[in-house]
Image (cartoon, rainbow, N blue to C red):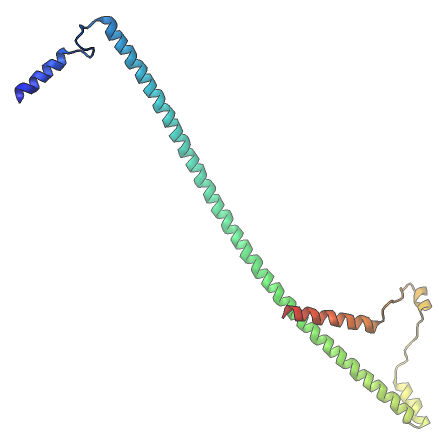
Length: 184
């Protein structure tokens, strides 16, 4: 085996890359030019791909930064949305409580009005049934109510009402009840 490997080494030292032709200077120059062009092409190829890889690495870094910013903004958005939902829930609860309180207040007002109407009709009935000398004293207990006509109101600069206060009261009461029923 030593003899075979030494023969191969000797043969490769003696053989030229140009085959069996004898070595000449132009052939060596041509080979050197081809190797130089090949080296330049390889360098150009490697430079191109190296710059592409560097650009891709920069793009990956930029993308990573954008993703981090997106995550931060997404977290902020979700936090704001949760805060908004909590605020909305608090406001809905407050509106429901306000509607309940308003409904109770209107019920009390209506009850007081009924009581006043019953008391007023009871006073009027007692005035009719009472003897003459008591009638004067009962009428004095009832406060006098001034009467203003539309002309008097217009002279004072107060616009006349197209709806009576009782109608407005009933309308407002209906609206409050409808609102409270919708909230339930």
